Image (cartoon, rainbow, N blue to C red; front, side, top):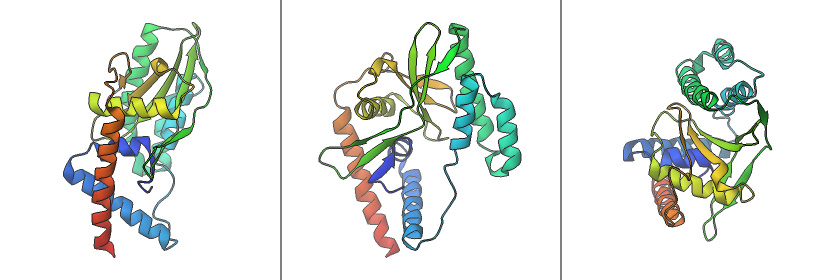
Length: 221
C-alpha cells in the first residue's frame, strides 16, 4: 500500500523499525507499486484478516481460536510460522481479561475510518477494530498490531492512540486499546498518557519515510 494511503499498523511497523528493516519494508512497498502499475498481482489479500476474524469470533464465543488456527494452517501452510504466535499472544491477553470480568461479551459497533492529515498528502486508514461490550456495559475498542518486529512501545503507542483519536472522534479515547497481538500487551491512554507532541512526531516520522522512499524509488527507474 502506498505511503500516501497507509494502514495505521503499517505505519507503526515501518516508521518504528530500525534502518535496515525500514529500507526492506520500503523496497517491498515500491515493488508492489511497480507491480500494480504493470497490472500484475504481487500477492493475495491481507495475511492477517482470517486470523483476526477468528480472534473476534473467539471473543464473542462463536469460534474456538485454537481450532480455527489449526484449520487456517491446514488450508495454507504459509501461516504456520506466524499464526500460532498470534494465537498465543491473543489468548494470553484475552484469558487475562476474562479473569478480571466474566461478564458476557457482545459485539459493539463496527469501526472503520481514515484520517487525512492536514497539510500532508497522507491518509491513515483504521480497520479491523474489535469492538466489544460486556454485561456491565463496559465498552472497549481494540485495534490490533500484528507485526513480529518491532514490538510496540510507549512512544509508538502514543502516536497510535493519537491517530486513533483523530480517526474515531466519536469514540472516547479512554475506551480505545491497542493490542500488540503477538506479545499479548495492550496500551491505553490511562497507562500511556499523551504528551501533546504526538502530531508533530507523527509528521516528522512520516516525512522521513516519504523522503527515504522517494530516494529508493529512483533506484528502480
